[in-house]
Image 1 (cartoon, rainbow, N blue to C red):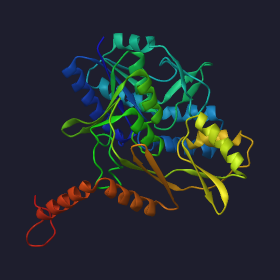
Image 2: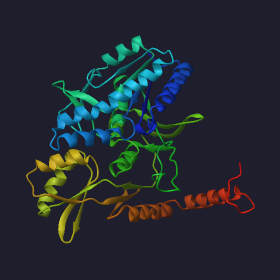
Image 3: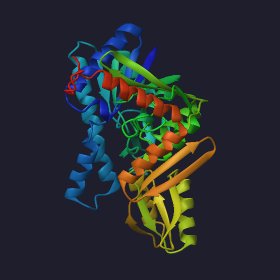
Image 4: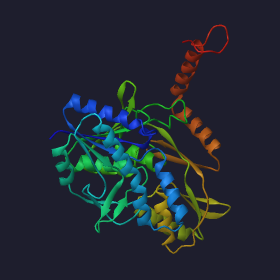
Length: 382
């Protein structure tokens, strides 16, 4: 049967009323295309952090499996709320969570990896319903225990479902149209990239860009799933970026939440680096005050558990902000101690990469001035 796979991140659900808005869009998709719809959802904006803080408030040493089960409830609640909103429109709908989804993983709680898939549960749900809502970022291990695929991993769930159903594409909705040459919330001159390759976007994600989960991109590349990035606007859906086999643009990324470890020796640091690389965790080697250090960029909670079991004398000392400029095969990394200097540096790098973007910014500023009242009162023209 013809099926459309869409995914809505937490930025799409900042308020309970947003579920009705997304439900209406799903209804329009169903009516216009004739395809049945699988909608993968993340937890409401900020919910995962709240759940984690609550759990750690109860027990600072909560087991990884206990924490996974708790964090997954955010996506479960989001799926139930969207199901309720779709049901209000009179459309046959159901929701599935990790226990019945048909995705099995290893037991690396906090960042589990997909090991096998069974499309039958989803196909059975599609036979009975027009829309199937899926709680993203979760599955079960071989023992039937709930596992979490990692932070922001609902992208991965959507791609896995597209691949298991033999689909060629899945649509990822967020609060921006697509992939930009820099974070458009931080760099005013950031440019939308219409088309980009798997390798480039995966590298951007590994260096801290909050665009797509890098393991989702890797899975899409392996199974030839095209990712289409979109935004839901007042005028409907707007397509921004298509992620497929080819396409490149120079970009700058900024990673704010990193962990810096001081290591006893270069040999121990190299041991940790090999361990982290084996688990596809991005990290940077550097020295500070003569000490070998390691800056971990992605999957920090999972990485710190690996470090704790490695038998090295690594000590967490601080966090740094990482700015990375990506230009073809060249990758240059800059470490900053504070967010403000890092953001200013990222803006400077982007202006050097895309000088025309600066001109565009000047034009936009001039246009805004023209819209102001001629009497100098500063009010906007209605």
